[in-house]
Length: 327
Image (cartoon, rainbow, N blue to C red; front, top):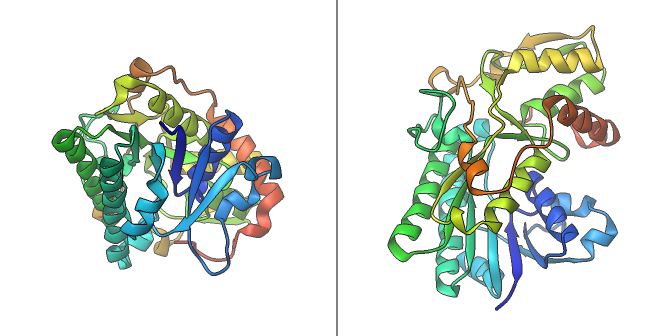
């Protein structure tokens, strides 16, 4: 039996960190990256040569069932991370989210069923819960599609559940809360704040400041994925990866201002606000389940994670367009 691992969305933020960690631990990894005429492998291109040389690259499109089937051949475990994730972009391009997030997940599930893949980890998001109806949010919390993005992730999750219940597919739904760290795109709030500050801007433009988030450093997220995959007790489960702590966007921004540029001010910009009923006001995760079923525990505090992210952005600021709103 093959022991090769497939990571879809390997060219992205979390996916590239997951690939890097799996290779470091000696795993054989096939990285599914989005085909493009530039032959760009996304963040995989930035990995050290000794890591990159150990990765088998597969270029394709998660929306294409034929390509997905080819990528899934001889795979024992698949970490399915490929998705469209930007919430503002989902407001005006929802069709692409259905095609990528729902149909793409179906392609992975179907191929895994046909090939008897040993483990299938489908990546969810805390956004499926919507604004917390109670805290901390555990895995029994109701779902609420407050954006087309979150609605498609709910759909993908329920498809994954159906394959476990209908076909006994060895599926686990992995639900990270708000992950941040090196390589995250500027459409996310932390690199948005840090990149503006490092660019010397005195007015930091943000959307709503009152919502709270449970912030998870990317290395802890990746460790959570790997721990879940190693545990037989997690099959058929939906599992949060979270810290159990929350901070408001406004307090987060002020913390970063104090760290980088104390004279900067926060400006709430109209175009960055979500529609009123779409804004998720509070996310605070319960991590009791992952702590009980795996050997995982978070290793990074918010302060250490933010410091590491800031250090990385200082070296990579030229990758960010700090003068525009990145959706």
